[in-house]
Structure formats: C-alpha cells, structure tokens
Length: 457
Image (cartoon, rainbow, N blue to C red; front, side, top):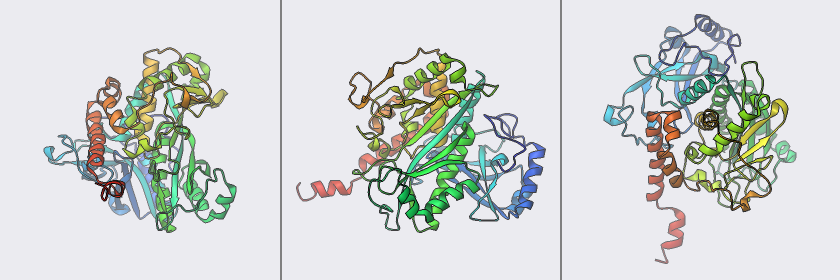
C-alpha cells in the first residue's frame, strides 16, 4: 500500500475494534506526508454499495486535513438501493420509515493511493459509521471483516485471488472486436492501446495484476489480480472494476461486468481462488489435510443457500448453462471446470477455486460468503466430500445449483447459516434487494415479448 510501514494483513486495521474508530497517530502523520509528497489537492472517499459499485465523495485535501479523523457525512440510502439507485428499503436503519438518516464515511488511510491518470487526486476506501462513531455492521466491507474476524479465532487468515471477466464495447455498445479468440496474443497486440492502459494503469494504482487476456466471447477480457489477503483483495477488486470502467471511458469505450449481455455469447464470471493460512505463514490446506477437507465440505454445504451473494441479479443466472465453462451442478473436482469448485495447485499453491460467481458480484460479499461457507465446514467438522471426475454437466447424481434468482432467494431467506455468519440486519437488507430485482424483472415488458406477442396475440 502507499503507507507501506503499516501493512494491511488479515483483519488488522487502523482502529482498535469495530465499535469505535480510533486512528493510529503515526498513520495520520504518514497520510499528511503522503499528501504533501504527491502534491495531492483532492481526495475521493469511496465505499461499496450493496451492488459492489464504488461510490462516495470528492473532497479538497484542505478540508480533509482539517477533518482528518472526522470523515464526512452522507445519506445511508446507498446501502439500500438497487443497481439503478431505486430506493427499495423498508428498514428502519436506512429506509424512509427511519427518516433516511445520515452516516459517516471514515477513511481507512491504509488504502490511500494516488490515481495515476489523474495526478493530484487520491482515492481512499472508507468504513461506514453512525454519528456516534459505531461501525455499521450491514456495510459490505464490514460483513467481510466480521467473517474474517471469526475465522481468526480459529487461528487462520484467508488469502484469495480474483479472475474477473468483462466485455470491452465500442461507443455504440457493440463488441470491440469479433470472433472467439480466447488467449489471443494477436488481439491483445492489435488493441494494445487499451490493454496497455488497463495493465499499466492498475499496476500504477497499486493493484497488482497477474495477467490480462482475451476470453471466449467477442471483445471479452479477463483480468487476474494477484493473490493477497482477503480484505486487500476485496478492496482492490472494487477499485479495479471502477478503474477499468474509467480507463475504458477515457478511450471512448465501455467496460461491462454484466453477467450475460447477449444470449448467443459467453457470459462473464468471477472465479475466486482461496486458501487458509496459519499464523506462521503456512498454507493450512497443506499443513493439515482435514482443514482442506472441512473447508471444501463447507463450501458445498452452504453454496446454494449463499447463492445470491455469488450471483446477485436476475441476469447473473443466465450465464449458468451446460457446456459453457459456467457450472450447473454442485460438486468439487481436481482441476475440473465442469462443477462449482475446482481443487488446484500443489504445495503452497494448493487452493480451491469457486467458479459459480458472476462478474456482477460484489467482491466483499462474494469473498465473505465463500469464506463463511468454508468456516462453517471447519466449525462443524464436516467430512471430506466426494471428488468427482469427468464431464459433470452430464452427472445426474450431483445436485443442481439454483438456476434463477427467485429459486436462490427462497434458499437465502430460509438460511440459518446466513443469519449466523452475516447477521440479521444484513440478511434483511440484502433479501430486500434481491426480491426488488426479481419484482422489477417480473413486471418489465421486454423487446423480446413485443416481438413475440404484439402482432400474434
């Protein structure tokens, strides 16, 4: 991170607990020095809404320096609105019934970094407090931190890596290029003006990239972020998605993380690689076989109940089709891409890849749900699951995964595991969100319907 003296590992933060924000004086001094050294005159304070969009405010650095530990106020509404900012909540916490109250954006200065293509402007991720200084527990970043804190009581930290697919579109919102040219060096070279900016921009933005390459659909691209502790990975993923969109717009293009743009082309997924690590920095999946077995069993046991946190929109489920590299069956296999989970790597690289999530998933919530599922397996000491082989799209012995948000919502609403690991407040608000998405979809008349029924009915 920019303030490299204070490394962010696991759930170590700059406040002493999750009830009151207490800033570390040396971090504040380094923050002031960073502003001076980099000639920062404005700072964007950002946070994730439920959808996973990076939103917030831009402040002149003069004002922020005067209120370095105060943060800045904003309405709670973004915690409870949909992807188009429709305000759906009936909760007293954030809805009109409670007066649509304020909250405070409290910067986590360990995430501070200058925006490389906008010199003089920096970005910092914020946690969310109520005006008494108490942490808002339903905020996506806090949901993840609560899960990681519970994991830490078992002596483990979580490391994850993100592989996220998206489409590059031209000014008319058509694919930037045609054809199915996955891993095409030729396409990367031909469109190097945008790919170079994406790669260099993220690296200079202190988001380490492992690779970027073309994917299966026309204009489809995958970005692979380097493995890191879970919270840093979630922060970097939220920032990276916003950065990719901004860099694309600077070039007259669009970058879309919509799960399925066209029914004739490949959908976009978010593959999450994960492992647990001990206090002596050893891969726990290697040190103790039962940890890996428990963790995999938990991922399977909680998968369908947590599905809306993997695939949060109606559109998310349209990529889950047979023979598509997206899963339809619940299972785990060794280096097998036909099921929900893939066991890969060896030695320190041993890890589990969750393949279910769609590219529109909120990184904080996806990682929280995945780690919580594995944690459930550890706490319940679940037995080793069966490892499947072959083409499991054709395996009728494996359970199906939910194929619509409506089906997944029913399981989430009834989930005792969701209440246990994410809290009643979050489950209530997130359930409202997914049901609102379903309701809007069910009452919307589409072009397909008009073409199919208008003249023939």
